[in-house]
Image (cartoon, rainbow, N blue to C red; front, side, top):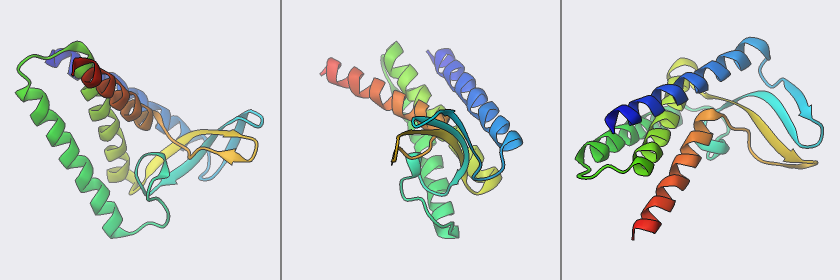
Length: 154
């Protein structure tokens, strides 16, 4: 199962970093390209907070070190948990892999840019969901998978 975990992490991190590289290379900071008018844009935002802009805002060194530290602790906790599982189930391993990969992708951005590159921007006319990226999506899907797995198990 560790091979499956590694594969999920590798695929998601590569896809996350590749899409972010395309955005950084093709859009200026804060540039918006409309894909579906009134519903979906591709943007180039930089997020100083957590997933979906949580606790975002102005950059501060303290916030940068806090989110970097939390990411490293989360990665270590996931590895520790995964390695101590007596019986690894596919859904659980994939969920943990997705969360690990998402945290890794966003950590790479924090270390490279001091911020996380976000580019998927959904809205319904004037109502906007915070911009996010592939890593945020992986964390969300991984958390939903784990929740489903543990609720079903219990």
